[in-house]
Length: 246
Image 1 (cartoon, rainbow, N blue to C red):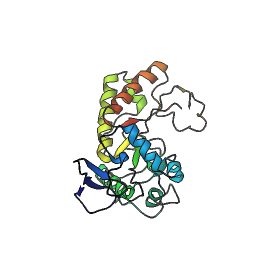
Image 2: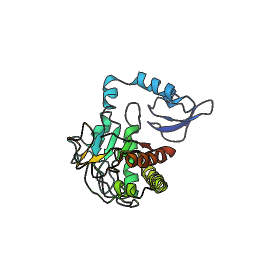
Image 3: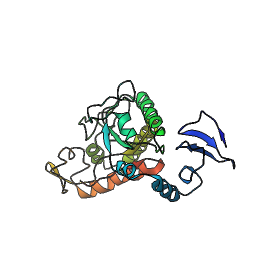
Image 4: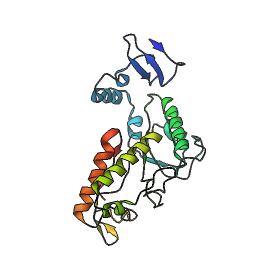
């Protein structure tokens, strides 16, 4: 077993049979969940068997966070929670949705620091970062955020008004690449829903009253065909679209 760095969680190692892997739990052994040769299902099963009940429960949370202007990962609470980002990671949370954030360079630096904090946890489970839309003009926290350093596009209803699925695919591909560059792996994007007046046609409309503005269209055909083009394009290279029904 050889290592290319100081011993510790997340250290890159090479096993005796020549497999390069990240020693996520810092035990100096190539465990199944760390083995890149194994099927993902097998790795997940091995990881689940190692997790405590508390660590499994922490996977159910999707906590909102603000990113400081200097990109630091603070041990002080922000405006969304009474527990700091470092504290949340230490509790085993691995899914976070960012709201306000600085430009792409600082955002990428913050993401790297959060992952370094996750490497210091017991099993070294990486963090998944998601985001509400950042490429439109609307600025409504928990719904959409005005982009800072990202390309600017019409809001979804404006894109849908073009009836141009090719344009929407181009938008989705650019947004995908920009998100991946800063560490955003999941796009909490606009709901595929039909707007009647001022509410979405879904059971949760009363709770999600801020969502209708960025819906795609008042027409069912456009509300399905156009955003589906966006979803499939976003999913092409490593970004998971979260296409919600509201």
